Length: 527
Image 1 (tube, one colour):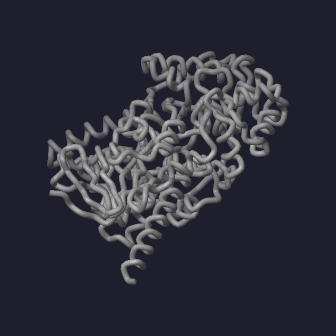
Image 2: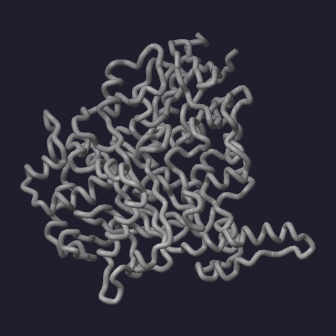
């Protein structure tokens, strides 16, 4: 026997959560189905790599002109603005550069990409690599474009398409600032989801959606069935490409073709922990040409989490109906671990909230357990926890390497130990001095590798301006099917924007579409 809801949102990433937040005042029974064990989608933290949550997915807020920035201000998040990138490393010459205006090839590359919106749409699409060659770009310009622009877009230069580059350039309106928050991005997820209570059902992957003008029947793996008037699909485009969800009747041919043309590539984060810094003071980010890893950045640990336990309780206990065959996401302790909040990090938050902002050395020295002398068993448990925390606190300096596209796909085939060794070798070459021949290797503690191609229900990082995509493909992806099936998610953003604010904007757009249909049908019924 099936249950019934007015609106069902498939996918609890930022697009799905934000749409549900906007829909809830109009549909009290809105339901969000999430395939994984936690809301947030590609906003996720790594637990245990450091004493604080390290972002596994989205890292920065790209641009200050958006509703996302307004929401972060509402949350009273501390935000620091950075220039991106602030350093360059030319691998073939083994040369660092801090002032890009001193390099003519850098200026030429920036000028070409800044002006790409002035190009005419080509009748037959070409890659950014071919476009640059047609412009007479030197091999160094090609290397800069690949390491900087293509890698940031989430691909490599031969995968980057001119048509969608033109659209992206013409429609980008968020600004050029790179913003870093003083809290983990999981706080944003909690803030959006805080009023949804138990309406987020995790571990609920959808297998099939039957739809007609009267509504939809959603079938989950395990046999659960849900009927609804409207369904909003916000899953990554890779899920649609793999046909993990069957649509009956099938999606329109034009939409199927657009789904196959727009691509999402892989991205890998190499999270490196060091005993001491070996990079210049004030260092934020470096783009590396002709190198194993094209980009590294260093950001300070978040100051603290802004969300109170009262606000996050419903999020941590986001559950599913007992009729589902999938287990509940977990207890509050497990949920905290999923948010990347280790015990050491939670203790650090308490110190900061009490006005005691500690250096890593102070944190380590002050983390002595409060031993209860009358309880030997408790004492032993606390000693074990203390040992674990001390081990975590040894890694107090974090540098993250980022690689995307076909380079990431090649690195994905390597053993993790090989990836770490190659990364250390590159960092040693970059930061070597006469006094320190192997600075990175000497300071290295441990590493954690996040490979998004291995993440079930994602199978990649984010969509990019794809070579051979058609003008208007993103609009086709966003087009509803009748009055029943709607679509959102960064791949459906008309401006080819894969960022967090874009995902939220597509959720808002889909909410408007659903409400418009509902109002029209309500109007007809009263006549």
